[in-house]
Image (tube, rainbow, N blue to C red; front, top):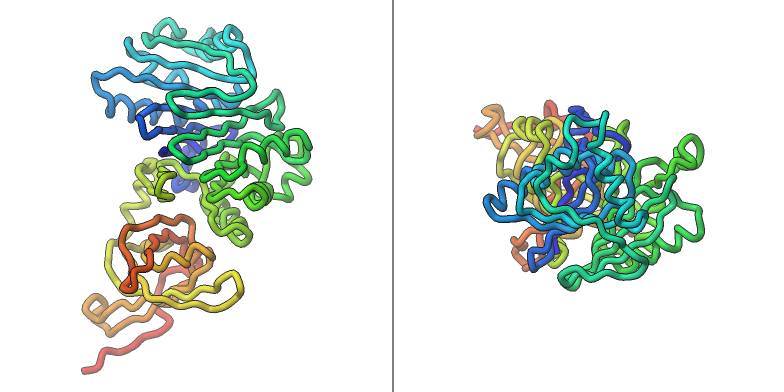
Length: 403
């Protein structure tokens, strides 16, 4: 089973440069089973890019997908009018929701394109559309066992658990803690999940005061659930419109102090649940512009960090690319245990022409990638994308090249 993120933002799209790394599109998640069954969770603005990708992938072949909606707030349905596969004859889409019966679900979905909200209605769409009742309990779709549970959110919301190909994926977005019924439901969904996407829109302080009752959660509650229910990987999801990349980085860093295998949801991230890998297969335009300012290289780097017991560890690594604000490097798999890493990067005289330069940097890991390569003693190696907390500038240490 593969899970790809197309929209990770909450409330409203945010096409802003400061949000480009994580992305500004609203909720949309693609799930592919090993037998190529296509499942789509939520239809926020990220659905548009997914639709374009499906058109390229399938070409003249027909597309069939099951669409599961968590609820009907704008940020979870606003991509429907812009989903190109819905306009092509021969395609088939089956809409599911436990919150509304089939006929009422149809009225809600078709109402997105009703007057005066859109210039054409759903009669312009050539694909077959079916609106199905999703009763309590389990539903089996081509080998995937899918269950839902009620979440604590204004006007209701559903969380989903997908068990397929020997793995478990859970989406629990738009939920607020401290309702005993719903707290128990989301924990039951998350039990032993390989991957949990969890609503982390607010900070714990916001959740306690000004955002109480708004129907969202925090990284802290996500960590509690992950720890209590044996979750293997936690992904913070449904970022607030006012949380830029740096702020989301800070939330991820706080979560990793308590649950190291935590990531921030980013558009283009694809999780291969059978191997445990997380890879970046697409970028938003803004993130692409940012990537162009990176410099590719292959330089040795000394990595220094503390393990959960507070013991200092050191290892040799390789820096692969760097920018003024970030770095990508390869090191031992033990780096998963902490987000805070010190780097000593040696830039040789052949590049500087002014002697070897030793640059010392503080970095915070924001993304991990399992690699096939191993160390000399056969240990697995890890790719790490990190934010530079020490600005990249003149080296604090200069080692002159001997004549």
